Amino acid sequence: MSHAKNKVEWCLRKAEKELKDSDTHRGLVKVNPSKEKAREYINKADHYLKATIYLKEGSFSDISASTVFYAMYHCLLAIAAKFGYEARNQECTFALINSLIEDGKIDIEKEMIDKISPLDAEESKEQTTIEVREQYQYGTSLSLKDNLYEEQLELAKKIISKTKEIIEE
Image (cartoon, rainbow, N blue to C red; front, side):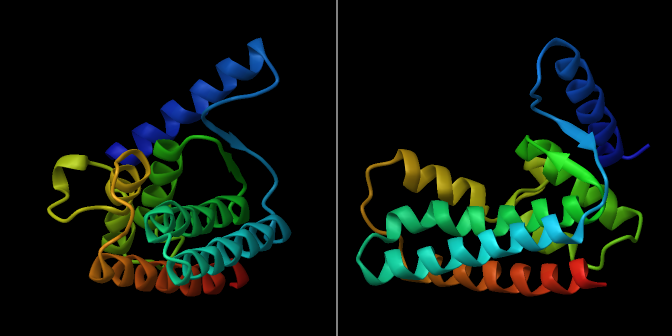
């Protein structure tokens, strides 16, 4: 079994255990597939993308590092919803997306997902979107470098576009 599939199984068990003790979880739960919920996540992704552009125009590009990440992450939640999963953990979400790619259920480049956050952090040679978000969210810099902003914005646009295709298939 692949690393992604092992992680998905772990996430499903984690959530199941947590739901026995409370009404919330920090894992992955099977739910009814929902294109409607997927579309809601896409709307949120578009909203975050608009916020990213707005923040850059207002000279708050450091904050846009977070909004551009969440634009992409909501796309992954949209895909999860379409396939009948509720994810409440970023690692679990990335594992699920990688598993869906491995199974040929979604047509999205693994390399694109790895640019946000690779399943195996040691595989990454470039700075990931999560690393950029953490650097600018927790650091003291007040502006995102223009080339880094443009790279992240273009990646988000591609992922949103691809996700829209996936959820409407």
